[in-house]
Image (cartoon, rainbow, N blue to C red; front, top):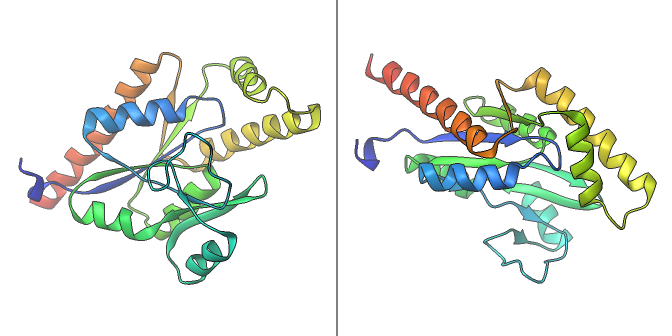
Length: 199
């Protein structure tokens, strides 16, 4: 099948902090030759981060201007900074027949689903809650107890929302198996879509 005949699709991948989404998404993108959507943010750029590769780093004023112009598929405020998914690059990649992977939190995922109801919704679950708590606490070193508690409460709320609103759930117990599970879900959905198109 040549690229021009391929069906473009948007895959939203969400899951709580510490579940391994970023690593999983990078491997799915590499193996499917997909496009990883780059988010915009108002948070400061990290020393090793590149504008346009890790994020589009925007001033708060520019972010609000683009938001008001309808240029984001979704946006949210997280820990005092705004994050959003630029609409144009996603729509262009889908029009070009590419698979677009969008790694965002559940609230953003639900916004995307309203805007693009055909998007596939995949939620990544931890093998056990105690393992997730351990990972979150490891990530949150240097934070006070209240901040860590907020992260834990947020993770639990995200899992509840993901179970209620997402179509597919993948448990990230072994990374290689979780990556394959996500790839299988995407490929099966694309096969069904192409069969419907041919009918």
